[in-house]
Amino acid sequence: MKELHRIILSPKMTEKSEKLKEKVNQYCFEVGLEANKIEIRQAVEQLFDLKNKVLNVQTLRTEGKLKRRGRGRNVKYIRRAERKKAIVTLVPGAVISVFDQG
Image 1 (cartoon, helix red, strand yellow):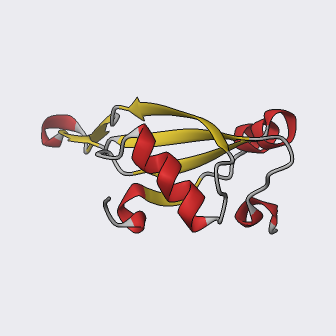
Image 2 (tube, rainbow, N blue to C red; image 1 turned 180 degrees about the vertical axis):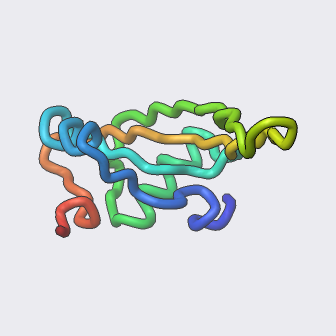
């Protein structure tokens, strides 16, 4: 298995992820582009001490946006980096303490 910090990069704390957490016990993470669902499941269980409490892992990949820089003849197009996000569903009653802080 790869290093855990290459699989799970950071938790995503947005309004949408807060609603998912409260309603259906789902947590969002930004993950590495090369990480697959099995590695994400194992990394979440290891990092947050959740033995067999991950029910489902859904992943989605967003393409980097094309942005314009400059004006006139000096226009340059820059592509932002691609991102991958994972939505992890836990069994009812299980929580991840990182999301409850703040």
